[in-house]
Structure formats: C-alpha cells, structure tokens
Image (cartoon, rainbow, N blue to C red):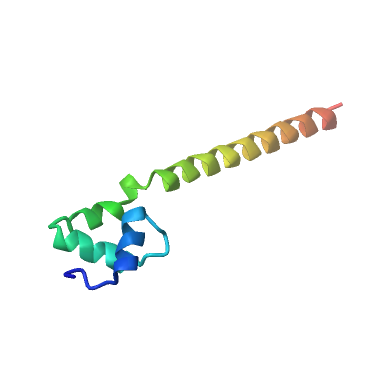
Length: 81
C-alpha cells in the first residue's frame, strides 16, 4: 500500500474516524496531489467554529458591559437624590 498504513487504519480513515492521525490524512492528500489543501484546513479564515466562538464571546462581553453601564447609571441617579 502506497500510503503506508494497515488496511484497518485505511478503512477507519475512509469512515472519518477521528482517532486516525492527521499525518495519515496528510500523506493521503499528498499522494492524491491535494496537499495544498492542508494550508486551507489551517486557515483562520476557514475556521468557522472559531469565528462563531469569537462572535459569541464578543456578544457576551458587550452584554456584560451594557449591564455594568446600566447599573452604574442607576447608581448615579440614586446618589443624586
């Protein structure tokens, strides 16, 4: 086998088993002439989960700041009486 792995590993790879090493996938891509796709896999612009997490975190921080601002404004109004 050109990829250099056992048949059970190849079957697991074809099934998308997450226990298969990234090196096996990289070798397979290289043998298929698709190794350039590896750079795209690691591209932050393609990492939608990380982008979604960043957006959720920004929204959480904004909500916390807004709540703090409202609380501060209410405190100022109460202190003015």
